[in-house]
Image (tube, rainbow, N blue to C red; front, side, top):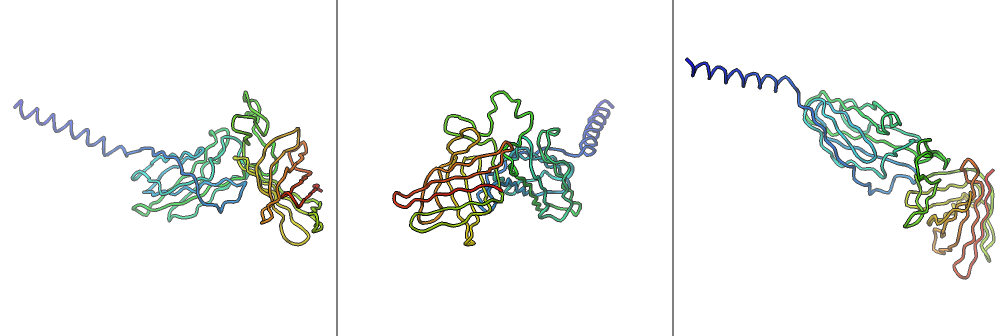
Length: 285
């Protein structure tokens, strides 16, 4: 009788455990770092994260910086299938944020844009009721500044040790964020011995590694383009070491003057290859 009661008690305990195990769905988080994007088709001045996951049923995906956290709501845990970012989602004000659902048979919906209230993370819900796993691909993109170099959160300005735009640190100058600027204007460039040409629209792109790309629309219909590195700051004037993007490779200092709003209003250049000399002067209008 005691043995029978012991067996019954043992069976009843396992039945209770089994009931709890069946009644409570598994819920786990998967976390990984998106790899660095190696593609070169994303325009300079644009941030982009392509998130690719293998999903079974329903998950909630959070992206902060380049860290991806997937909370399983139902079904098996999701798996990364090559998620990548060309740079981390900013830990501050995000300009021109955009969400795109690119691939997947179920519902992909943006629940929250990155803001200071949620720690600057984007949250996406994926729901797939068709049964079985499915590949999903969605994209987050943003402008790294927009055109105004002074776009920063007030919290950034109050942070101790925060430097304005460029910081003198070991290893050189570092942008707090990448930047894109474009404006209409007029100017001219002159190459000794070859004459001059008129300049119109100007575009300036600067990435976080201090690389700069400056391009002008000319009266010939071609673009006059320079690339190089930001090397200094004098008041409201940015200094860069640039060269022409052609076989001539004329090189020299470029000076980009800014308005109080952070927009470039004048660009000057003197470049040479040791023999030929190129001068340029452009003003915003």
